[in-house]
Structure formats: C-alpha cells, structure tokens
Image (cartoon, rainbow, N blue to C red; front, side):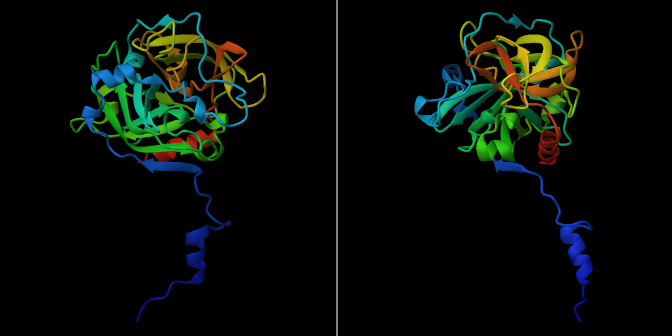
Length: 297
C-alpha cells in the first residue's frame, strides 16, 4: 500500500506557511567552455572595449547615456596587494565580436566567484557572452595566475528583461584551474550589501580607450553621490577611466597597505554630458540574492 501524504504537508512544501515561495529573480546560463586556444595573444590584443558596441545594435531610442567616454586622467595602481591579484581583465565574445571588460574575485561559498557588470555577461535583453575568460592579475599581456573560463553565469532579472542599469551586475562561477579554485589561487575580496550610501570608494579596472591601453590596472578614488538625473539608483564616483573598465570592482573600506576592501559596486556607465563621473549599481537586496544564487553554483 502506498503511503499517503497529507494535503496540508504538500501545500506547505510547495508554498510555505504564508503563501507561494518567492523564487529568486535571477537569470542563469550554463556557459559553453571555450577552448583555451581560442584566446590567442593576437585575439586578446584585438579585442574591443565592450562599451564600443556596433552602431546597428543600438537601435533603441537615442541613448540617454553612454558607457565609455573620453578620459583626461587616472592613476596606475602600483602598490600591489590583494587588489592587484583579485582584479583582472575579462575576455569574451558577444554576437561574434571579441570584447574586453574588467572584473574581480569575490568571496563565495564555491570559491569560484567573479563579479563584473551585467553587460559584460549578457547584452541586456539580448545574447549571453561566449568564450568568457577571467585573467586575474593581468599585467601588460602577462597572466601570472593563468586564466579561468566561465562555467555558469548569472544576472538579475531586471537586467535581463529590460537592461535596467540599476541592476547592471553579473556574477560568474568559473572553472577550477589545475584542480584549484580561483579564491585559493588569488584570494577573494569581501562583498557587501545594503551599505550606507555616499561612502568613499576606490574604483579599479583596465580602461582600454585613449589615453589608456588596457594593459595596466588603473584606479580612481573619492566619495560617491546619487545619480543627479534620478534615472537609476546608482551612485556616481568622480573617475576618468574609459571603456574597458566596465565591470571593475568598487571597494569600500579599502586598505591601501593590504589592497583589501569590500566590493560594493562595479563600474557601469557614464552620462554623455558628464564624462568625468562613473556610475555603479547600488548593491542592495536584489544583488545580495544574485550573489547567494551564484555562490551555490
């Protein structure tokens, strides 16, 4: 005789005591592992800053902002420390075109977690990136810690459905290298959520548009401010880094001596009428859910 299960128990299992269980608003994708040989030195050198999207792909109404812009200044990070190991360049292919972004290793249960901009993982409502590879500690073509290809990618629902810049964050679980997890090789920065706004932050990345060339880790630092146009929930940081720095981590509570801090945002976009301010999404509850989902991958 087949044992029966009380209907109430089934209801609670499916819905919980107070109604339907709320599923995380996270969209995920299993990456096709790219052959390591795809990213030759020539392909890496020729990859474009992802912000320089083909004109034909920008068919929507006239853009209210752009993700790159001319730069006038920026400082090279020469103090070493953890940030020089955990921050790196991302090489990816989007709709058949090779691009570069920036990203950082962050703490996660799987020890394989990378945070970057959503548009460095998925083209808003469009395609997922292919051939996605993280190179931590990148320095003038050198890969001191090797490369880590993506195995699973995650973005917040609002980014995937409507390219909402307030949610322009991507999380990627990378494959191990020689049996070692990313965090065991280069370490991982802390990641924080729902932090007070207006905090001092250091933004890191590999800008590739002039006057930069994408070969060195650059940074900017200062206080953060709300989006004056009130079109996003982002915060702005005075920063002249150019395209290619997209996805680079913003660290609060940063210790210059150790190179450690807490990632509370990533570089996302600039308004066309203010190219000296970089904007990054606020890491609130939605991004916390994104992280919790990705770290279990």
